[in-house]
Image 1 (cartoon, rainbow, N blue to C red):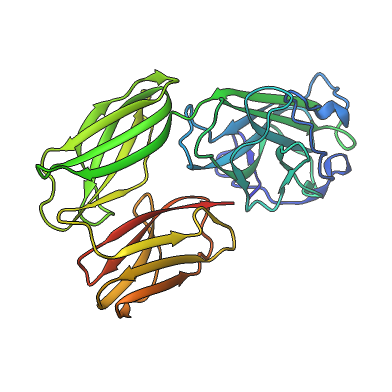
Image 2: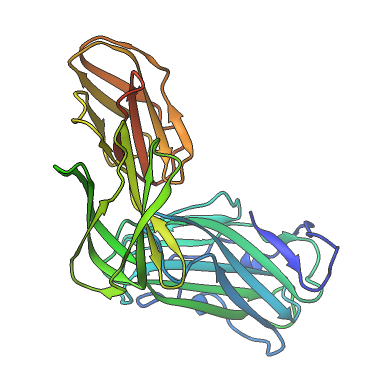
Length: 381
Protein backbone atom coordinates (compact mmCIF):
# COMPACT_ATOMS: atom_id res chain seq x y z
CA UNK A 1 0.00 0.00 0.00
CA UNK A 2 1.30 3.46 -0.92
CA UNK A 3 0.65 6.05 1.77
CA UNK A 4 1.40 9.70 2.43
CA UNK A 5 2.55 10.99 5.81
CA UNK A 6 2.57 14.66 6.78
CA UNK A 7 5.56 15.41 9.03
CA UNK A 8 4.83 17.28 12.24
CA UNK A 9 1.04 17.34 11.80
CA UNK A 10 0.07 15.19 14.78
CA UNK A 11 -3.51 13.94 14.80
CA UNK A 12 -4.29 14.88 11.19
CA UNK A 13 -4.02 11.28 9.97
CA UNK A 14 -3.45 10.12 6.38
CA UNK A 15 -4.37 12.24 3.38
CA UNK A 16 -6.10 10.48 0.47
CA UNK A 17 -7.23 13.20 -1.96
CA UNK A 18 -6.28 12.59 -5.61
CA UNK A 19 -4.74 14.69 -8.35
CA UNK A 20 -3.01 13.86 -11.64
CA UNK A 21 0.63 14.68 -12.24
CA UNK A 22 1.54 14.11 -15.90
CA UNK A 23 5.26 14.43 -15.19
CA UNK A 24 5.34 11.16 -13.21
CA UNK A 25 2.15 9.43 -14.33
CA UNK A 26 3.87 6.76 -16.42
CA UNK A 27 5.82 3.70 -15.34
CA UNK A 28 9.60 4.32 -15.45
CA UNK A 29 11.84 2.40 -17.82
CA UNK A 30 13.91 -0.51 -16.53
CA UNK A 31 17.56 0.27 -15.93
CA UNK A 32 17.32 3.69 -14.27
CA UNK A 33 18.44 2.59 -10.78
CA UNK A 34 21.90 4.19 -10.87
CA UNK A 35 23.56 0.79 -10.31
CA UNK A 36 26.63 -0.24 -12.35
CA UNK A 37 25.44 -0.84 -15.91
CA UNK A 38 22.25 1.24 -15.40
CA UNK A 39 21.32 4.85 -16.14
CA UNK A 40 19.53 7.01 -13.58
CA UNK A 41 16.49 9.29 -13.44
CA UNK A 42 18.25 12.03 -15.42
CA UNK A 43 17.57 9.86 -18.47
CA UNK A 44 13.99 11.18 -18.33
CA UNK A 45 14.04 14.02 -15.78
CA UNK A 46 16.00 17.27 -15.63
CA UNK A 47 17.08 18.20 -12.09
CA UNK A 48 16.40 21.76 -11.07
CA UNK A 49 15.14 24.04 -8.36
CA UNK A 50 17.57 24.63 -5.56
CA UNK A 51 14.78 25.14 -3.01
CA UNK A 52 13.38 21.63 -3.53
CA UNK A 53 14.72 19.49 -0.68
CA UNK A 54 14.21 15.85 0.27
CA UNK A 55 15.73 12.38 0.54
CA UNK A 56 15.12 8.67 -0.03
CA UNK A 57 15.04 5.95 2.64
CA UNK A 58 14.96 2.20 1.97
CA UNK A 59 13.64 0.62 5.16
CA UNK A 60 13.42 -3.05 6.14
CA UNK A 61 16.72 -4.65 5.15
CA UNK A 62 18.80 -5.94 8.11
CA UNK A 63 22.54 -5.52 8.44
CA UNK A 64 22.87 -9.24 7.72
CA UNK A 65 20.32 -11.10 5.59
CA UNK A 66 18.96 -14.48 6.70
CA UNK A 67 18.69 -17.18 4.00
CA UNK A 68 15.13 -17.68 2.66
CA UNK A 69 13.75 -15.01 5.02
CA UNK A 70 11.06 -12.63 3.74
CA UNK A 71 11.41 -8.94 4.53
CA UNK A 72 8.69 -6.26 4.23
CA UNK A 73 10.36 -3.28 2.56
CA UNK A 74 9.31 0.37 2.58
CA UNK A 75 10.52 2.89 0.02
CA UNK A 76 10.10 6.23 1.79
CA UNK A 77 10.45 9.40 -0.28
CA UNK A 78 10.68 12.41 2.01
CA UNK A 79 10.07 15.98 0.82
CA UNK A 80 11.32 18.43 3.43
CA UNK A 81 10.68 21.66 1.50
CA UNK A 82 9.57 22.90 -1.90
CA UNK A 83 6.38 22.67 -3.96
CA UNK A 84 6.75 19.13 -5.32
CA UNK A 85 3.46 17.51 -6.25
CA UNK A 86 4.56 13.84 -6.11
CA UNK A 87 7.47 11.38 -6.22
CA UNK A 88 8.41 8.16 -8.02
CA UNK A 89 11.19 5.60 -7.57
CA UNK A 90 13.09 2.60 -8.92
CA UNK A 91 14.82 -0.06 -6.80
CA UNK A 92 17.32 -2.75 -7.81
CA UNK A 93 18.91 -5.48 -5.67
CA UNK A 94 21.91 -7.36 -7.12
CA UNK A 95 24.55 -9.87 -6.05
CA UNK A 96 27.96 -8.24 -6.37
CA UNK A 97 28.54 -4.73 -7.64
CA UNK A 98 29.40 -4.76 -11.34
CA UNK A 99 27.67 -4.01 -14.61
CA UNK A 100 27.11 -7.77 -15.12
CA UNK A 101 25.65 -8.37 -11.62
CA UNK A 102 22.21 -10.01 -11.64
CA UNK A 103 19.28 -9.84 -9.26
CA UNK A 104 18.87 -12.40 -6.47
CA UNK A 105 15.89 -13.33 -4.34
CA UNK A 106 12.23 -12.86 -5.15
CA UNK A 107 10.07 -9.73 -5.07
CA UNK A 108 6.33 -9.59 -4.47
CA UNK A 109 3.97 -6.72 -3.70
CA UNK A 110 0.36 -6.08 -2.79
CA UNK A 111 0.81 -2.33 -3.27
CA UNK A 112 -1.37 -1.31 -6.25
CA UNK A 113 1.01 1.57 -6.96
CA UNK A 114 4.11 -0.64 -7.36
CA UNK A 115 5.14 -2.71 -10.37
CA UNK A 116 7.83 -5.41 -10.71
CA UNK A 117 9.56 -6.26 -14.00
CA UNK A 118 12.61 -8.26 -15.12
CA UNK A 119 14.74 -7.37 -18.15
CA UNK A 120 16.84 -9.52 -20.48
CA UNK A 121 19.91 -9.11 -18.22
CA UNK A 122 18.10 -10.88 -15.33
CA UNK A 123 17.72 -7.67 -13.38
CA UNK A 124 14.44 -7.27 -11.52
CA UNK A 125 13.23 -3.72 -10.91
CA UNK A 126 10.70 -2.58 -8.31
CA UNK A 127 9.25 0.80 -9.27
CA UNK A 128 6.24 3.10 -9.25
CA UNK A 129 3.47 2.06 -11.61
CA UNK A 130 1.33 3.90 -14.11
CA UNK A 131 -0.90 6.82 -13.15
CA UNK A 132 -0.66 6.48 -9.38
CA UNK A 133 0.16 10.09 -8.52
CA UNK A 134 -3.43 11.29 -8.55
CA UNK A 135 -3.81 13.88 -5.82
CA UNK A 136 -5.81 17.06 -6.44
CA UNK A 137 -3.79 19.40 -4.27
CA UNK A 138 -0.14 20.27 -3.86
CA UNK A 139 1.88 19.12 -0.89
CA UNK A 140 1.70 21.60 1.94
CA UNK A 141 4.81 21.42 4.06
CA UNK A 142 7.12 18.45 4.69
CA UNK A 143 5.65 15.15 3.60
CA UNK A 144 6.48 11.50 2.88
CA UNK A 145 5.24 9.09 0.24
CA UNK A 146 5.66 5.40 1.11
CA UNK A 147 5.64 2.45 -1.30
CA UNK A 148 5.79 -1.17 -0.09
CA UNK A 149 7.00 -4.55 -1.37
CA UNK A 150 8.29 -7.84 0.05
CA UNK A 151 11.64 -9.47 -0.76
CA UNK A 152 12.54 -13.13 -0.07
CA UNK A 153 16.26 -13.86 0.24
CA UNK A 154 17.95 -16.70 -1.64
CA UNK A 155 19.32 -19.75 0.16
CA UNK A 156 22.90 -18.60 -0.46
CA UNK A 157 24.98 -16.10 -2.44
CA UNK A 158 28.58 -16.10 -3.60
CA UNK A 159 29.02 -12.38 -3.08
CA UNK A 160 27.50 -9.61 -1.00
CA UNK A 161 24.14 -8.03 -1.85
CA UNK A 162 23.93 -4.43 -3.08
CA UNK A 163 20.72 -2.38 -3.09
CA UNK A 164 20.34 0.67 -5.33
CA UNK A 165 17.41 3.03 -4.90
CA UNK A 166 16.66 6.24 -6.77
CA UNK A 167 13.70 8.60 -6.53
CA UNK A 168 12.45 11.65 -8.39
CA UNK A 169 10.60 14.27 -6.35
CA UNK A 170 8.60 15.96 -9.09
CA UNK A 171 8.20 19.72 -9.16
CA UNK A 172 7.18 20.23 -12.78
CA UNK A 173 4.79 20.68 -14.48
CA UNK A 174 2.57 21.75 -11.56
CA UNK A 175 5.29 22.65 -9.06
CA UNK A 176 7.62 25.66 -9.26
CA UNK A 177 10.88 24.26 -7.91
CA UNK A 178 11.79 21.67 -10.54
CA UNK A 179 12.64 17.98 -10.11
CA UNK A 180 14.90 16.70 -7.34
CA UNK A 181 16.66 13.33 -7.83
CA UNK A 182 17.77 11.55 -4.64
CA UNK A 183 19.46 8.19 -4.11
CA UNK A 184 20.33 5.63 -1.45
CA UNK A 185 22.76 2.72 -1.75
CA UNK A 186 22.95 -0.14 0.78
CA UNK A 187 26.31 -1.77 0.12
CA UNK A 188 27.65 -5.29 0.46
CA UNK A 189 25.04 -6.83 2.79
CA UNK A 190 26.08 -10.44 3.55
CA UNK A 191 24.16 -13.60 4.33
CA UNK A 192 25.57 -14.54 7.75
CA UNK A 193 25.88 -18.32 7.43
CA UNK A 194 25.76 -20.51 4.32
CA UNK A 195 24.55 -23.77 5.89
CA UNK A 196 25.26 -26.63 3.46
CA UNK A 197 24.34 -29.64 5.63
CA UNK A 198 22.60 -30.51 8.90
CA UNK A 199 22.27 -34.21 9.86
CA UNK A 200 21.39 -36.33 12.92
CA UNK A 201 22.58 -39.82 13.92
CA UNK A 202 21.85 -42.08 16.89
CA UNK A 203 25.08 -43.15 18.59
CA UNK A 204 25.64 -46.65 20.09
CA UNK A 205 25.57 -45.08 23.57
CA UNK A 206 22.10 -43.68 22.84
CA UNK A 207 23.14 -40.04 22.42
CA UNK A 208 21.84 -37.93 19.55
CA UNK A 209 24.73 -36.55 17.51
CA UNK A 210 24.13 -33.41 15.47
CA UNK A 211 26.51 -32.54 12.64
CA UNK A 212 26.35 -29.45 10.44
CA UNK A 213 28.65 -27.72 7.97
CA UNK A 214 28.90 -24.18 6.63
CA UNK A 215 30.44 -23.00 3.37
CA UNK A 216 30.96 -19.46 4.69
CA UNK A 217 30.14 -17.32 7.72
CA UNK A 218 29.93 -13.57 8.22
CA UNK A 219 29.30 -11.86 11.56
CA UNK A 220 28.25 -15.18 13.18
CA UNK A 221 28.38 -15.40 16.99
CA UNK A 222 27.08 -18.83 18.06
CA UNK A 223 24.72 -21.71 17.31
CA UNK A 224 21.95 -22.52 19.76
CA UNK A 225 20.77 -26.14 19.51
CA UNK A 226 16.99 -26.46 19.99
CA UNK A 227 15.03 -29.66 20.69
CA UNK A 228 11.32 -30.54 20.60
CA UNK A 229 9.00 -33.51 21.08
CA UNK A 230 6.46 -32.32 18.51
CA UNK A 231 8.40 -30.23 15.96
CA UNK A 232 6.66 -27.01 17.04
CA UNK A 233 7.60 -26.04 20.62
CA UNK A 234 11.40 -25.98 21.03
CA UNK A 235 13.74 -25.54 24.00
CA UNK A 236 17.43 -24.63 23.92
CA UNK A 237 19.70 -27.47 25.09
CA UNK A 238 23.15 -26.09 24.32
CA UNK A 239 25.34 -23.67 22.39
CA UNK A 240 28.45 -23.78 20.23
CA UNK A 241 30.64 -20.83 19.25
CA UNK A 242 30.55 -19.89 15.58
CA UNK A 243 33.50 -18.91 13.39
CA UNK A 244 32.62 -15.22 13.21
CA UNK A 245 34.05 -14.67 9.73
CA UNK A 246 35.10 -17.52 7.45
CA UNK A 247 35.24 -18.25 3.72
CA UNK A 248 36.19 -21.91 4.19
CA UNK A 249 34.03 -24.98 4.85
CA UNK A 250 33.69 -25.56 8.59
CA UNK A 251 32.26 -28.59 10.40
CA UNK A 252 30.45 -28.69 13.76
CA UNK A 253 29.33 -31.51 16.08
CA UNK A 254 27.06 -31.44 19.10
CA UNK A 255 25.95 -34.43 21.23
CA UNK A 256 22.61 -34.12 23.02
CA UNK A 257 23.55 -34.96 26.65
CA UNK A 258 19.98 -35.92 27.64
CA UNK A 259 18.15 -37.21 24.55
CA UNK A 260 14.53 -38.32 24.76
CA UNK A 261 14.33 -42.06 25.32
CA UNK A 262 10.89 -42.50 23.75
CA UNK A 263 9.26 -41.27 20.58
CA UNK A 264 10.80 -38.80 18.16
CA UNK A 265 13.16 -35.91 18.89
CA UNK A 266 13.11 -32.85 16.63
CA UNK A 267 16.12 -30.54 16.35
CA UNK A 268 16.93 -27.23 14.71
CA UNK A 269 19.65 -24.60 14.96
CA UNK A 270 19.23 -20.96 15.87
CA UNK A 271 22.11 -19.17 14.15
CA UNK A 272 22.85 -15.95 16.04
CA UNK A 273 24.89 -13.02 14.67
CA UNK A 274 27.26 -10.78 16.58
CA UNK A 275 24.65 -8.01 16.55
CA UNK A 276 22.02 -10.28 18.14
CA UNK A 277 20.02 -11.02 14.99
CA UNK A 278 19.24 -14.66 14.30
CA UNK A 279 17.60 -17.11 11.91
CA UNK A 280 16.75 -20.81 11.98
CA UNK A 281 17.89 -23.90 10.14
CA UNK A 282 15.54 -26.52 8.78
CA UNK A 283 14.12 -29.04 11.29
CA UNK A 284 15.59 -32.55 11.54
CA UNK A 285 14.12 -35.53 13.44
CA UNK A 286 15.44 -38.73 15.05
CA UNK A 287 13.60 -41.72 16.50
CA UNK A 288 14.57 -42.86 19.98
CA UNK A 289 14.26 -46.45 18.82
CA UNK A 290 15.02 -48.07 15.48
CA UNK A 291 14.08 -46.11 12.40
CA UNK A 292 10.44 -46.23 11.43
CA UNK A 293 9.44 -48.90 8.94
CA UNK A 294 7.34 -46.28 7.12
CA UNK A 295 9.13 -44.57 4.24
CA UNK A 296 8.10 -41.08 3.20
CA UNK A 297 9.08 -39.09 0.10
CA UNK A 298 7.92 -35.54 -0.70
CA UNK A 299 8.02 -34.30 -4.30
CA UNK A 300 8.53 -32.18 -6.32
CA UNK A 301 11.17 -30.59 -4.14
CA UNK A 302 11.83 -27.70 -4.58
CA UNK A 303 8.18 -26.90 -5.24
CA UNK A 304 7.33 -24.19 -7.75
CA UNK A 305 4.32 -21.89 -7.68
CA UNK A 306 1.19 -23.67 -8.91
CA UNK A 307 2.52 -27.22 -8.45
CA UNK A 308 0.78 -29.77 -6.22
CA UNK A 309 2.55 -31.31 -3.21
CA UNK A 310 2.75 -35.12 -3.41
CA UNK A 311 3.67 -37.28 -0.41
CA UNK A 312 4.52 -40.91 -1.15
CA UNK A 313 4.10 -43.24 1.83
CA UNK A 314 5.30 -46.85 1.77
CA UNK A 315 4.17 -49.01 4.71
CA UNK A 316 4.67 -52.76 5.30
CA UNK A 317 1.62 -52.87 7.59
CA UNK A 318 -1.89 -51.48 7.85
CA UNK A 319 -2.14 -48.00 9.32
CA UNK A 320 -5.29 -47.16 11.26
CA UNK A 321 -4.72 -43.43 10.83
CA UNK A 322 -2.23 -41.40 8.85
CA UNK A 323 -2.11 -37.67 8.19
CA UNK A 324 0.32 -35.10 6.81
CA UNK A 325 0.85 -31.54 8.02
CA UNK A 326 2.94 -28.70 6.55
CA UNK A 327 4.55 -26.28 9.02
CA UNK A 328 6.41 -23.02 8.60
CA UNK A 329 9.79 -22.78 10.31
CA UNK A 330 8.25 -20.53 12.98
CA UNK A 331 5.89 -23.35 14.06
CA UNK A 332 2.78 -22.16 12.21
CA UNK A 333 0.65 -24.89 10.62
CA UNK A 334 -0.30 -23.95 7.06
CA UNK A 335 -1.68 -27.16 5.46
CA UNK A 336 -2.93 -30.57 6.58
CA UNK A 337 -4.69 -33.66 5.23
CA UNK A 338 -7.63 -35.43 6.84
CA UNK A 339 -6.55 -38.51 8.85
CA UNK A 340 -7.54 -41.83 7.30
CA UNK A 341 -6.90 -45.59 7.11
CA UNK A 342 -4.25 -46.95 4.74
CA UNK A 343 -3.59 -50.67 4.15
CA UNK A 344 -0.07 -52.05 3.71
CA UNK A 345 1.48 -50.91 0.45
CA UNK A 346 2.31 -47.72 -1.43
CA UNK A 347 0.08 -44.65 -1.11
CA UNK A 348 0.17 -41.15 -2.59
CA UNK A 349 -1.18 -38.18 -0.65
CA UNK A 350 -1.81 -34.94 -2.57
CA UNK A 351 -1.99 -31.45 -1.07
CA UNK A 352 -3.00 -28.20 -2.74
CA UNK A 353 -0.23 -25.71 -1.81
CA UNK A 354 -2.64 -22.80 -1.90
CA UNK A 355 -0.73 -19.55 -1.44
CA UNK A 356 2.50 -20.85 0.08
CA UNK A 357 5.14 -18.14 -0.15
CA UNK A 358 8.76 -18.93 -1.11
CA UNK A 359 10.74 -20.36 1.80
CA UNK A 360 11.46 -23.51 3.82
CA UNK A 361 8.74 -25.74 5.29
CA UNK A 362 8.54 -29.00 7.26
CA UNK A 363 6.23 -31.79 6.15
CA UNK A 364 5.30 -33.99 9.14
CA UNK A 365 3.68 -37.37 8.48
CA UNK A 366 2.10 -39.05 11.52
CA UNK A 367 1.07 -42.70 11.42
CA UNK A 368 -1.09 -44.10 14.25
CA UNK A 369 0.23 -41.30 16.44
CA UNK A 370 3.52 -43.12 16.97
CA UNK A 371 5.99 -42.40 14.22
CA UNK A 372 6.17 -38.78 13.08
CA UNK A 373 8.43 -38.52 10.04
CA UNK A 374 9.69 -35.09 8.97
CA UNK A 375 10.75 -34.11 5.48
CA UNK A 376 11.89 -30.68 4.39
CA UNK A 377 10.22 -28.82 1.53
CA UNK A 378 11.53 -25.72 -0.20
CA UNK A 379 9.08 -23.50 -2.08
CA UNK A 380 10.46 -21.27 -4.82
CA UNK A 381 8.83 -18.67 -7.05
